[in-house]
Length: 106
Image (cartoon, rainbow, N blue to C red; front, side):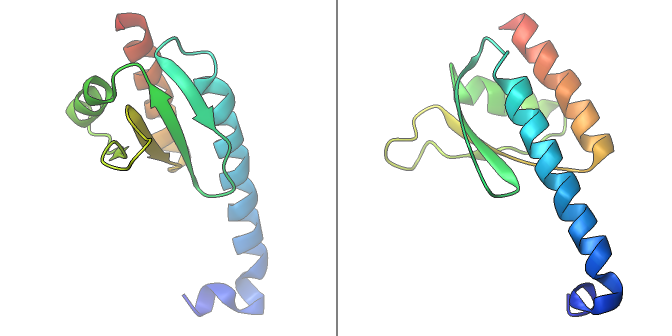
């Protein structure tokens, strides 16, 4: 961790942050077009919170495909909400395909 903060790595860290923000924004836009998504809440973090038609169905389908989403339903006011963390380019490509498949079957 300390090495990542050294001047030699500062540009690498800035670049990764820029990539994460861009991917988070891309995911936000993608989610806005999916029928099963009821709301997607803006975020400054490396994840998005969304309300869906049926969180349990989404969580089960995602787990079946190897994706781990955070179930937020135990928190007051977050019924049918899940949290999605931003992953690598490879992970996100697979995840977009999963989201589109899930949307078609919903």
